[in-house]
Length: 59
Ligand SMILES: [Zn+2]
Image (cartoon, rainbow, N blue to C red; front, side, top):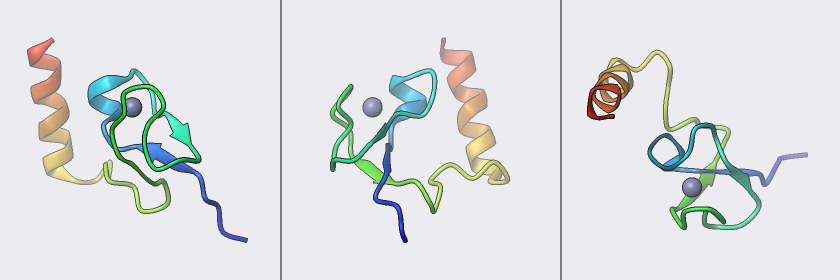
């Protein structure tokens, strides 16, 4: 059985950890909630690493 659990698509911006929800939007920040299976933030994605580095610098 497939899971309907979604996660906040902007959790890296808005939260310290992934936020999971069953609805279409994040209950916390209102961002789109996306299916958690195809992770939008691939740890092996060099651009993702770049984004994270940028984020750390902006804090
Ligand atoms: Zn959120």
